[in-house]
Amino acid sequence: MNRLARFAGFGSHDEALGEPAVVDRDVAVEQMVAEELREPIIAALRNVHDPEIPVNIYDLGLIYTIDIAPDGDVAVEMTLTAPACPVAGMMPIMVRDAVASVEGVGAVRVDLVWNPPWSQEHMSDEARLQLGLM
Image 1 (tube, rainbow, N blue to C red):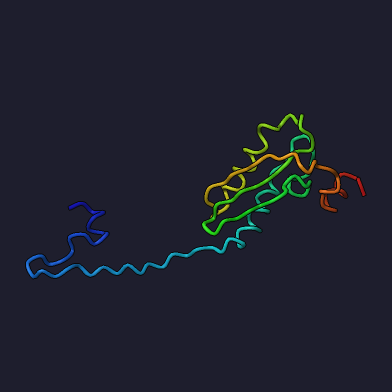
Image 2: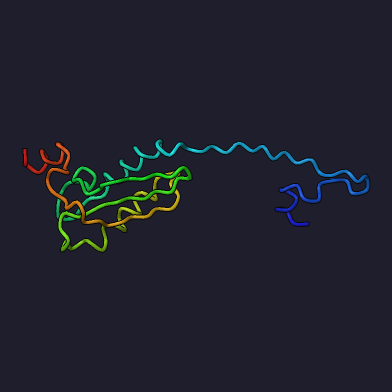
């Protein structure tokens, strides 16, 4: 019998006595509540910057939704400042990698959407101030 089988409790009964194995299956597994992931995900997104704009994509207003499933899977809807943005192919991958780096996150799906179109109204006050728009 291999070590994994012994660890799992297979073959750990006394066959001569006909007694089945008693295996304790109550293993405590810590699960995060889905909403507990929101702030770490936002913090990770604040580390992603559009190379042409010196503001992170979250405060820039490029992230429209962050849906977190109970199992930790995350779906993000995002946009870009313009459809012809030179980083259009890279940005969703950068977002996916940033979200996936958060402990407790499962599979990550990033959808690039164009409706509603991005405008300066989506920006946080901090981003407007940083860009001199206030």
